[in-house]
Length: 280
Image (tube, rainbow, N blue to C red):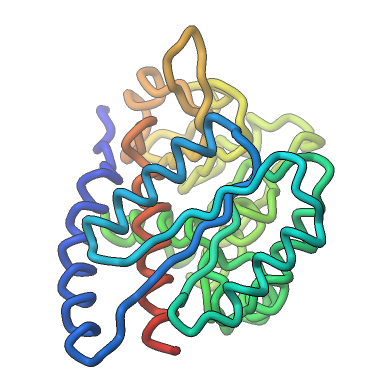
């Protein structure tokens, strides 16, 4: 068996064409979608992510601005800058690039963003809507993963989905989204006993822990759909949380790193920004 490779890069490019058309329609109605990104400090990985978001916005025709704040920015200064954007009617979406420097409280900063402008889906109000099964703004990476699964026609209803990683950014919200699609969901983490015995039961296996090649072929059920969220650098090269070459010979579907989930995360950020502009 050789897995079908789910190219997030190709899916995102297709979405970009649709988003560009939506932007044109909004502009005809006097709405000019705009995204503001706040970046604190000089984290190299964050700089790359922000640059990718800027490029994607430019291609879609979405106005974007990046507010770069120094490493020593205080919580109060960060909140003040967020509040300026909250009150700016020309800004529809606000994104705080994570991680923030360790002296800053990420939860407090994310909550300071007005829920209607939260295009990451991290605000407690938006997270609460998701928990109750009535989502308003979906976190970008889980939203992108679900899009990929549906685009590939991977059966969801009744499937056993195993999510490895319990972060607020990917693992927990993705588990809720999959539950909403009538999957049976198991959420694994660093304290899970005999992880391999659990992952081998998965019809859909999602790895989102940030450990290079954690998921090996013997941990995968033949014919499973394997989604790799991990981005790790080993010997100067990017790799995911899945041993791609070996698992690709066992799975039915697999996402590559790079070019898999990453581009879909950016695509869903643009989607959420457009939705915010429409609501505004």
